[in-house]
Amino acid sequence: MTTSSTTPLPFPAVRPFRPETYGQDTYGHARMPRNTTQPDPHRVDKVDYGRFRNLYLYITEACQLRCDHCYMGERLERALKMTPQQIVDTLTTWRQLGSDKLTILGGEPTLHPWYVDAIKAARAIGYQHVITTTNAQKIAQKKFVKLTPDDFAYVQVSMDGGSDRTHDAVRGAGTFDQAMETSAELCARGFDTRIICTVNKANEGDVLRLLDIADDIGASLVKFHVFSTIGTGHGNADMAMTPPEWVDFCERLEQVAPEHKSRVWFQPTYARVDQMSRYADEGYQGCIGRTLDRISVFPDGRAYICSYLFDTDMYFAKMQDGQVLINRDTSGNEFDLFTLPLTNSACGGCKAAACMGGCPAEEVVMGESSCSAYPDIVPVCRLWKSSAKPE
Image (cartoon, rainbow, N blue to C red; front, side, top):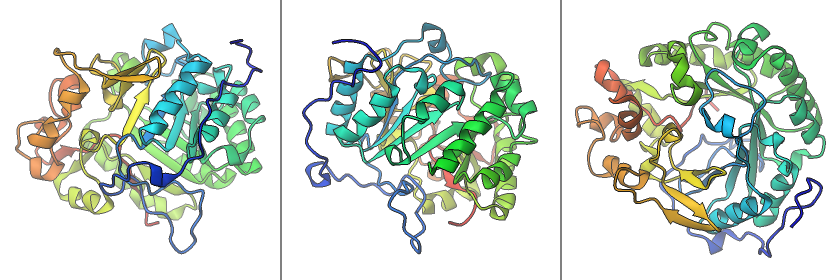
């Protein structure tokens, strides 16, 4: 097999996707309801919970940036990338296991020589919704020229500040202007373009300007999540917001979001006990280990359920020659870790009724649960999101 970037990926002989041929596991809803008065078949906002329904495929670990908060950590330096056969085998295997919503990431995924082919291969293999996350620098802009809005459900652009001052402080000089140029171009071409922002103590003062930016360029949604001290974040712990600070930020976000045209989402991550009934009403069901709703696969074959554990050896399974091999390492693995919120509270039981079992990954990564220091705070799975305004 040649390795030219102009050579199409080796598509397997696949049959068109037919939902009735796959299991219909439903445990509630993982996403926010779509606008039922004006239904849009391209919106991917309401997706039933189901085993491995969401596949996050890290086709490369390489990235031209070195952001202060990047959860990829040391992977950025080893810069592994999937071969064409790995991409096809992984896509095919998880499609057969029930995945139908795919997000292609890196590193910076557009640096992969087969990025365009990977996007098209996903459609051929039967993924109904293909998403990508990008830093929107010059190489990404060039790759998107080769693709059309129909190739994606949406494109997420990472922007870490509402100005060049805050964004470039995290991502490097000139990156804000280039991300803005690429994003505006995508919007003008009709791509469903969304902004995703990591909030930290240095940029929290101006990230809400991203709502104005989204309105100006026509981005459909802005999503905020909190800085986590994993990956590169280990060396920048002073950037992290405390749980109460993040709860306060989310409340400010909800106050200003209705003033804007774009939809606004946030990942609660932490909540006051009295907020949990609201999230439960929206479909929240606790730790992702309860539903196994997603799987993240890296070029080395490791597959994780929870992104908070990417720095650890507690992965769920490993891909090898297109096969999924469950990790049963007796020193620790995700399969065993995520039985905790199913049988007992992950953190001792003091607030289990409110937090639905807690976050077992916090104990692994931080050594204790976030709620231990805050009497009125409980963890919310950091992979779940809520809407900051009525939709």
